[in-house]
Length: 603
Image (cartoon, rainbow, N blue to C red):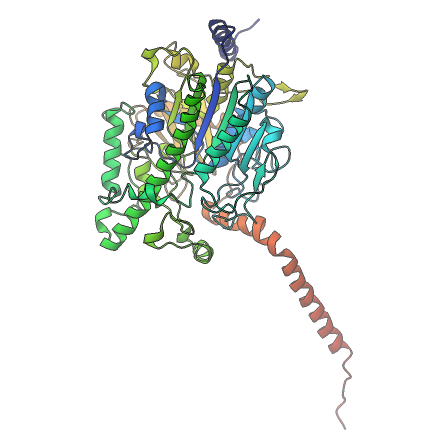
């Protein structure tokens, strides 16, 4: 038998899984699992990662567990969620791009369905089949087809919102005109939702409802909670907003440095880390007028309040598990789907036109029902400090996010409150969950159908202290979304971003020593620079990555896709009716001219 590195890793993972099962007493219950996904949180938005935002419940989980400071996801919502649920690269699992930003020339092509395809199995399906009760609440965003809704993807009970976002106070209110309505599903059927709610509170309420309904079950549970916080529109209860009054009056430039210094003090980044270079569009805080400063500070107050509100409701779940004796039997995982959101829909005339008809943005109403707020690129740079760029882009600020894992069974005290700097990826979550549950992935065949195998690695050896690195120094990890691309190898990262934050050219960074990506090393390591470009080309071909069409602009593409996917279906009957009237009118005019008698002039 011929062994290669892949075979060896598979054997080691299998042995580790067997070891876990042997070391766990037969009578012991397999751990419950709570997988919590925040929306658009920057790298330093959690207190345990350097934030001033009050997140005591997440901080306590970090203190009793492990933090991963070099953890990566995709730069936007659904591609990350697709990999989180399947452990398979998004270009293979069907979500090569989002429905909102995909070029029309890519629509429907292999790997670019914008929803999960049939060649993957979800972790929830595997856990469900192996004795877990499974629950899903929150933002789904991986497909609204019957075969992609939670019941078909391994969830016993579920209440989910199907699309990229929605209002946080009113269940039927769109956040942008990107769909015809807000799609809610209760166990796969159209849900009857209350008219009003608060999203973070509601998702925890539903999770508690499921746990209480099955309280007598002797099965462990898997709960997937995908919050809308802090996706736009930024909204939060006033009591939380009031706590941050005046906190951000010093501005985003000061906050960036505060976050960087705190991350260094916590051991999350090297003491020598330089702050990421700011884009040319950055606005200095001191250049703003007093009224602009007040408005911008309130935006960040709402952002912080929304994050703290989410943490508060996580605390309600933790309290319930402690009351029922399940807390010590539960593994918690927390991560964000991408970096902080910098986009401002008001910057576009079409966005501003729609928002002004549906929302208010007065300073004294920001955060409340009917109000709309964003933080924009300047605060987003602070939320991702000290990293470069933000959501949608391949800089570390767009794809490096906090990861907290807590409650690992028999975790020694020496392993708690540790920071792991090894390169990790969202595709590593499924192998980790399966190892914790003592469940083996089916490999390349599931229920008679060919599927894609896992390509990530379990994080258990690193957590247990049996390994320092998750990946070997020569293993590559590729990335691409909407033409922004990267390749990781050891401590190095090859990076190319499109406009407006980049120029489409490759650069090379050591992201361990320089997480802010401030020093291009291509001239210092010319051979590595070239070899990693070749590695990226091989990875892109193997994963079916499509080249972006010339002149691709994500903002313009959102507008085009809204016209194709939303406005045309919504108004096509009216437009066809108008076209029919026009055709009939022209036909009538033609017939009238054709049969008009010709009057001859008298001679």
